Amino acid sequence: MGGYDVLKNLNKIKELIGICPQEPAIFKFLNAKENIELFGNLHSIQKEKLKERTQYLLKKLDLAEASKRKTKGYSGGMIRRLNLITALINDPKIAFLDEPTVGMDPRARRATWEFIGALKNTNKTIILTTHYIEEAEALCDRVAIIDYGKLIELGPPQELIKKYQSDNLEGVFLKITGRRIMEGM
Image 1 (cartoon, rainbow, N blue to C red):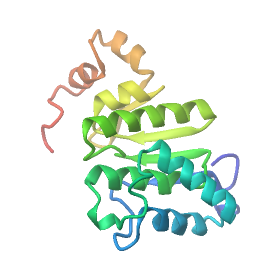
Image 2: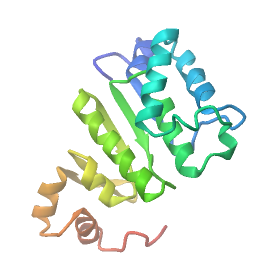
Image 3: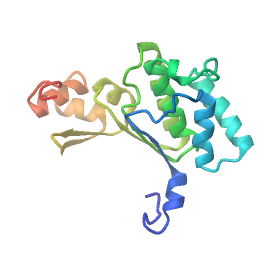
C-alpha cells in the first residue's frame, strides 16, 4: 500500500490512511472537539497542527457551532460528518469511506458530496463504498459494481453509462444485474 510493505511498514501505512467506518466510531459522552482530539492524538499529530486541522474540518463540514456539545444529542447526519472528520484528521493520502452519507438530510448530504469531491483535487485517493448509485455517479472517477460478492463491471461512470446505453449508473446496475437494487436485501 502506497509503496510500503504491509508487514514491514505498518506504522507508515497507518500514517497514510484514514478510515471512515460504516458504523460511527464516536464517543457520545465526549463533544466533537474531544472526539477529534482523541483520534488526532492516536495519530500523534502535533498539538498546534491538530488544533488547526480540527477547526478547518469542523468549519468545512458545518459542525463548528455544535463542536462543544456532547455528541449524544447529535443527529444521525451530524454523527456521520463527525465520523468523517475523525477519519480525515491525519490528512491521509488514502481515505476509505464506507457509506459516509447514510442518514444525512439532503442538505448535509450535498455538502458532504462537495467536500469529498474537493478531496479528489488534493492528490488523495478516495475509496468510497456506497449503495447510493447516484452518489457513486457524482463522486467517483471509476466505479466497481459488485453483485453478490463478485466484481461484474469496472470503469468510469460515463463510459459504463454509454456502454450499457443507460440514462444513469443506476440503469447500468439494473441492466447488468438483471434485478432491482433493493431485491434480496
